[in-house]
Image 1 (cartoon, rainbow, N blue to C red):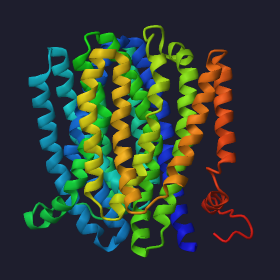
Image 2: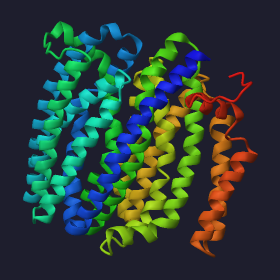
Image 3: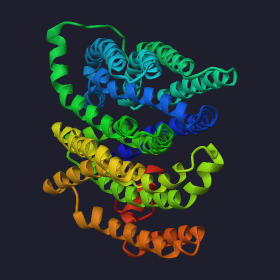
Length: 485
């Protein structure tokens, strides 16, 4: 188990750096969102989020699906890294420029008014800089040196927040905030390229077609998966904004979706850090990739239940307290929306496993299912049920990819249905029932009862096993004596 221990420790170390980075960045970003939401109000804040979301929809075109390709190839064979980095950077530069131009031009012609057109064009400037900057962080993560990601993102996101708040306090508006956002991403891109060049591999451009074609072919399924998964996350804001008449309600929905994205971002680093290690595990055929996936999914059910129950109890209290009385509906939305964390966290490791095992088109097909359900159901459900229809459509859009991934995993005997899915699901459903039964008495009692039921069910049904505890011990170098794992 020495190989397993080393691989798991690598995942723990690098995901720890990325989680630390996200804690710094997203705690500060949450403060930034809070201040922006309070000062701007739901209508203007919704406009800012719409512009930000618009350019994020085009970001996968700039990324070209190269994130997973870089991690997989470098994780399997670092001797090819210099050639790969030259090819992927060249593609990223060309794609980033074209995506930024498309983002601005399309946004200008389809936007309903001048305010939306102006902010979309300004945000398109940020797209290319962000794409190139993210290429550098993908290199850091592929070389399992995510400490550079922690340092770089912490510094530049803090700088963006400081400048943004300075502009807000000086009477600036959304255009100025968007300009600062773009400027910081371009500066970060330049700094990241400097670090890659001096620490990992010389940075140079290779635009010969013969050199780029194999990388393009390899990256194509990742590009599709990136496009579809991005629309699952960002599409609801655009679809809701274009369906609902009430602009303030669109702002409240956007605020809740941004908070949900922060939760997603806290889990994603584990998958990013795991992909190079999982790719090596597939080569060694040691089965550790499946062990990791099984543990991660079971833990995701439990973590998602904790977040969902807490959101239902605390959302109506905390949202008005933090964001003010201008957001009366957002607090009620958070709890139900937080349950999207469960299908998201189930799908994420299965996507990584499919890529590590060479099933490149499965993530694209799974997320395509989510995109179709989301795009069809959200306008219909919002028209019928208003903002609650939007929440329902978001959950369905997240659920479908998870179901497709699980079906594929069971078909290939990657997971055990009863151990990985059925038992944790039963425990989570029981905790929800206990919560609902006691919610009529007191929300605080309901939260305590629901969490107690979750803990009791975890112990009784052995959702967490002694083997899982041994694995956790290896991560921290403290495996229990006598363990045979």
